[in-house]
Image (cartoon, rainbow, N blue to C red; front, side):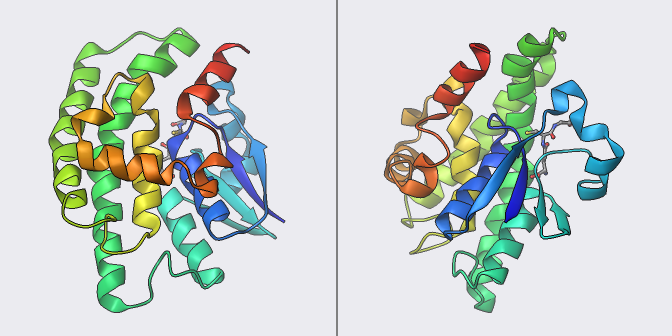
Length: 215
Ligand SMILES: N[C@@H](CCC(=O)N[C@@H](CS)C(=O)NCC(=O)O)C(=O)O
């Protein structure tokens, strides 16, 4: 059975778990904690040379980077969540790149300073955190505009671009970003968060964070 390595707090990891659920692929979720140095072992670095989570082990085939993993899974299981049509696929790729370059970059800065720093007793870099909030504000406006125009990010039906975005906005509630400031995104997220591909991961991001905090 395919193994996914990571932590339930990690949005790229949850992206892969949501994708596996959406295409109905049974998988084992193996907890590996970068904060405890577990991603720097020789064994793990063979799966993920960056030492980052997630990584997958699909019967001896290793892959890292969440979006590459989602594309691989869809192609392997013939899922139209990553369309084969040239133009449709190009739109999905655009949004995936946009999410990684602009939203995930901003989210990583905010999330580290707002949540992770407290967990590992690290110093908060306020400048980096403010920069992260700035990125998120600027680029969530673009997402809001798009989801006000089409029901899903890349058009009329759900794709892995929606999964990438859903896992990205998932932690917003714990970093004090109100999704209600983006009404089209809020309506889209509330619909998708009721679906089993999401609820099999967790009821909400806060539920996972609270469990981690409670030890
Ligand atoms: N672009 C990567 C990002 C992966 C990433 O940044 N993972 C974080 C957790 S959210 C991580 O492994 N951090 C630990 C570290 O940097 O050592 C992906 O989408 O898979």
